[in-house]
Amino acid sequence: MSNHSDMTWNNEEVKLLIHEAREGISTTGQYWEGYVSQVLNTIENDIKTNNGVGFDKFRQDPRLEGFIDNQQFPTYLKGYGLIKKILNFTRSILIKIPKISGLSRVLEVLNVYEDMVTQLYEDKVALGYNYLRSIDPTIESISDSCVGSPRFWNSSTGKSYTLDFLQKFLKTTVMDKSIDFKSVNTVVELGGGFGVQAEVMLKKYPHLNYIIVDLPSQLLVSQNYLKKVFKEKVITFGQIKENEFIDDSIFSKEGGNILMVPAAHVAKLKLKCDLFVAEYALMEMEHKIIENYLKSIGPLMSSASYVFIADRLKMHSGSIHKSNEEDMSIEILKEQFGKYGFEEKARSPYESMLVPSLQTSDIDLILEKNN
Image 1 (spheres, rainbow, N blue to C red):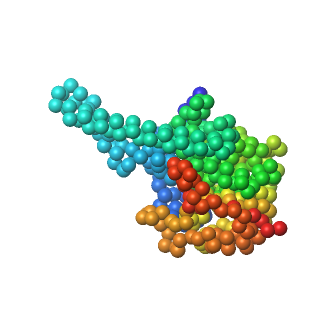
Image 2: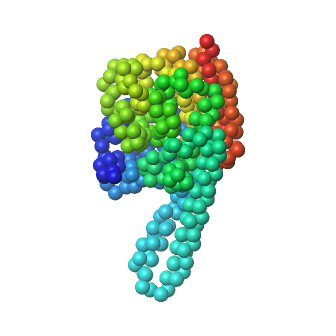
């Protein structure tokens, strides 16, 4: 059982990353600019007041919407939680007054709605799980850690799954079609979310060493999460902050390590990369930022054999973070990576349309080094 100190934002590594985010030189781009401030303000406020949702429930915190599966908690519509809190509070005060029958009825309706949402979510997860089990039985032996208190579904074997976990597992099945993971030792992921893709791949391929390059504001969440799941296997930013360079010697011989690197420190990486992964990251960057990232990781790209990209073909419509740049295209991505000798090997458009609950991207693209 975890103690409270294991499930908090209030630790030295978090404070170090907050300082890096506030004082560092990372370039966010227009898409992430507003959200970065929201993440930092949320976590700093929780540390200061010690009464926020906190790390132990971050996967249901509407203030960190970029880290939770929106299909899990559609009840977290703006204002919904506040309305229910007010109704419950009012009911607790007026419970002995007969005239509150109308209030009770409203609460009953809300409870029925939440039950329907729960059932719908569990049905989606069960459908996705059964599909994945039919194409890759490995899914039966691994499961979501459920750290951060997400809504989940239990299979007949008692293992817990979320849509987040299954969606990332689906990506590994796409990669499996074109990539021999026996020959892959080190993976570099640009933009790692809260770390669930790393979790899936390390549980499925425990020999891998995994590097997440991201904005420090995002590493606040992913580093805390993965440290909870994989413990001493995670090499934190605090452990490499003063390093002039980082080579393969930082990893243990048995593998299974996860290295957390803020984007501004990526030039320190002087190691071999076999697979470069970018999921829903490049679409959120202006073209110039993509070029700069690729230049900074040029040595990594020169050693890589494969690139996996999963993304949308268009920016989020109506997003307050929407870039003014033209929509990204597959040809632009191929051109950028082509500079490093990569050519298209396979693409899987609408792969997940077979099970709509697992659909997350418009296209999955695999590039291979042209030797």
